[in-house]
Image (cartoon, rainbow, N blue to C red; front, side, top):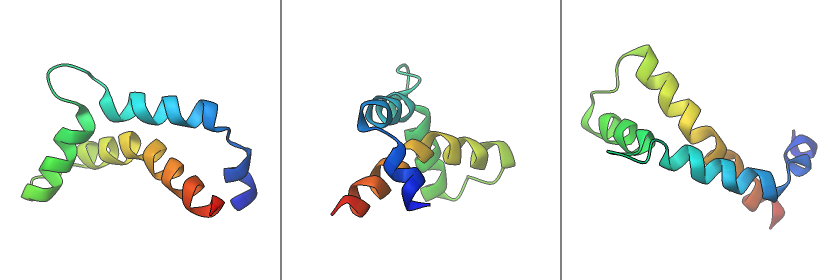
Length: 70
């Protein structure tokens, strides 16, 4: 698994993580909306959970890559 993580270049991972975290740009990023739903206890529908995982995945990969590098 670590080898696969090392093969993903930062030049691809960083822009994808930023775009997914901020999309859609208006009115509110989807990831922010889903995290707010999670914190308020309203994240119950399977589609909302899938959206949270989908939009957060690149950020999780980037964090894992940064942590493994150290």
